[in-house]
Amino acid sequence: MSSPSTLTALLGLISSAVKDLEELYASQDLSPPSLASVDALSPSEAPLRTPRGAAASKQIISACGMLSAMVAFPVAHVLNLSSQFLVSSALRTVIEANIVETIRELAGDNQQAGVHVDKIAAVNGMDSSKLARVLRLLVTYYVFREVEPNVFANNRNSVMLDCGKIIEELLADPKSRYEGQGQLSALAELHAEDGYISAEAMSATLRSPETTFSLEPNKAPFNRAYKYDGTLWEWLELEENTSSRLKFGSAMRTATKFLDAQGGAFDWAGLSEGAIVVDVGGGVGAASMALRALYPKLKYVIQDRAETIKHGEELWKKEHPGALESGDVRLEVHDFFEPQPTRGADVYHLRQIMHDWSDLYAVKILKRLREAATPSTRLVIRDYLISLACPAPPSSIPGAQAPPPPEPLPHWGPPGSYLGDIQMLVALNSLERTLDDWVSLFNRGGWTIIKVHRGPLLAEFVGAPSEPST
Image (cartoon, one colour):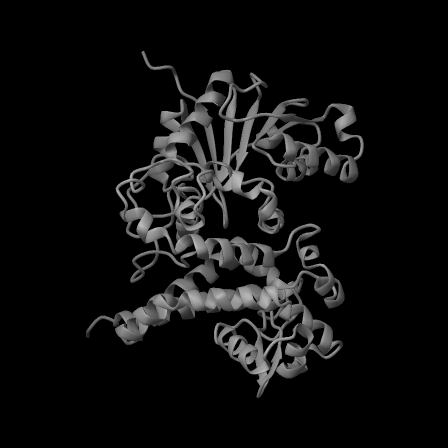
């Protein structure tokens, strides 16, 4: 008897993972998410964030991706890939035109019924036939629903772009969209606008002998696209780029909402009372706020640039009164390329810092921390860890070995982390790193990785000071 075909094997992977998801939902007396749902906080979303649910979801998405690539006509597959920029542009259009909020407001208590495109377009002064075509493209990617001809409704995916404000406020002050705790729409818009414009220059930047080998942050495709000689960070501070700066701030606050406070590799509870945790490049202190909620007996030092620290002080005084006055939390201005002022800390903590910098600069950051460390100091880095698109060689570092994809999958999907890697290349001439990249970076910076935890979004690396070479 012949062995099952690859198609049959992929179908088996999908079936087994679907069965696992259904059992998970049944055990919690829940139904799987519905594409018609407009409840962003629906209890049915929670199981997908558990390790079991995330693993089943990952297997389904990976197997469906390979199955689709196998059965699609190659010409259609390649041409569809080359046209994905149109999906990004469509998303940007509906965000900037407040379409999600318009549908939500006009539909009122009957969200499932949707709203005719003529009424949606009238609110924003748009051509309804053109808007219908934009929405219909997104419907085919399961963002929005077309419930009857030219009548569109929100769904579980489109509502993630809802900033929660009323249309009258958004039309009067478009910048108000980016106020508050952060909106996913800001992150999506940032990718679809500044990221899209920068990506147009990727080919020319990588093929140019002047930039292809550069590790400088101002030699990215972003610089060629915007004809700007400074870094992205400097560009965001310019007055004329206020809109992008507001979007970026909202996007980073949004990212924080989706990241857990601890990763599972470092024993935060094992630190003694009063132990000092330095949040290097910690922004306004969002990561420290999350950690402090779990470990209030520790002392936190948050370091960043002067303007950021100013905003951080305002935020801490508002949301955590007394924390600064007690000395349990301290905010200080610091450039992490300069000598570390808080020497001998128990922990130096960096969350989503290293992926902003090429190895040339990332090594400098780690060396500054190594200079300030004691033998008992630990380095905790929370950042992205991307897998190879082929079987990974074995690793002796506890927690570092990634579970291999089941046959016949050659690699794990979805491609989110790989898209993020190119996003960092395009914007900052930096990168997301593989395990080998991280090991090399730690070693060159004077540290040794002693443990890794692979989380659903970020990995946590724990490092100890290396012995000085003789």
